[in-house]
Image: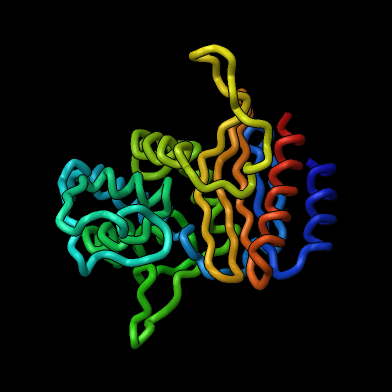
Length: 265
């Protein structure tokens, strides 16, 4: 891992803004981090503990993922996602809302899930996972007049979360498996957007690599976190950034993703 870390340090030295990275090779039991305990605005990365909370509550019989919720006009918010473009009054299962929250980062779906499971339960999940410096207070794309706190994460905390679900150590093995499967369907890509395409010539052939991930992006902030799979190799990666131009941040994320790919290959 030493060659990889030298290259990553060189990339960050030449990057604008502030960065944090946490990488753990689960096969070799080796890890490396940079500014891992620095706090960042969570953006859409906070949707991962929200997802975990819904699965946890389902495991405990506190809700059914098959239950349907009606999208009211007052539920609709802007930013990412497709629900804002649909007709109010449609009904979607809680499971479908969770899928849209992850693969499209749908903010309307996210806020509907938060209303259903409750802020306190999400905060409890952060504690259960051990995300000691991470906080959750607010729904997305809404700004309360009296702001109790901000949605905050650290690379260390997110890396801990990723390891727990990659190893089936949160709530239930089934819940972790479902979360990883959802994250593999991600439609927004930063770290892996320039990697070789997984276009296999035959049906049923396993792709060279898969990335179970979640991105987060607002003005000046661009994050990408996930679990990178290549054959039997599994590596968790968390990259957080702030105070940098979106194009510049994406370029750095592409470079980091390429070096991680080469390391695993």
